[in-house]
Image 1 (cartoon, one colour):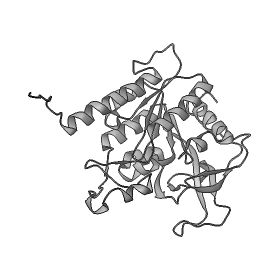
Image 2: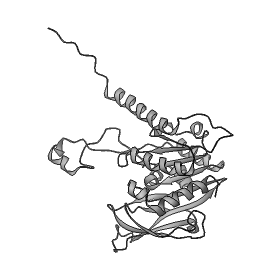
Image 3: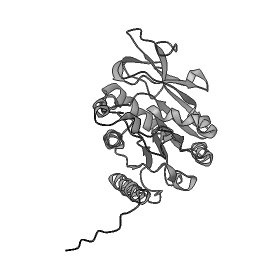
Image 4: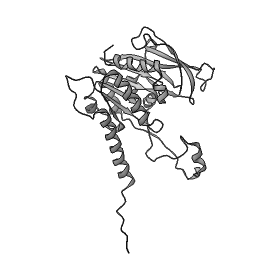
Length: 284
């Protein structure tokens, strides 16, 4: 008796088809990509997910946010598709991912420490990240905002600024680093800004991101502070946690909280996000 096996697909082909399928399902969850309608509500595209931030929790968090705002939102994990042509279909662009891809793959106990007991670390390939953003993509995002649209930069996307001058120019700052998850206080820096008006200070357990802000300090709307006095690599206990600025005819918001669903749905932070989307779309 003989057995015949189908020809095995290449790893590259499998990953390509799998990525396309996942992207298609994410886009379907938000209604799919189509041409902007002049008579419809403003449309949002969210680029989400990376090695350290599963796209599923981000999609769940932002779906709830946009449902409360009665606005459509579409999701993609395909960073390579970001272009001027694609962004023309939208009025708001959200970025919620870091700047790295791992072309040679990665193994290891990123989330589950006990995997080190099951595998030999000497057999793991050396993980070498590369930046995914091309300068023409950074230019596309910058031009999109200059033309009068909105850009909401979440949590770890300040890391992309390390790979693109144009992206950093519009986003406004760059990633320094962060300690492990820990409680810290988020305080309002400008209580007169439409995004933070009526917002109370709050404590959240999250990654306390440390970032630089390149533009006018008056645009800072949020600060984070570790109340236990824990420092981070001599950067102090306090860090910029959010800003909002005009850029050309458009607007930009950055908020640093967001490593977990719990943090995304902290009640005061959830209100900040609602206000931020309204402000970016010039509805506030």
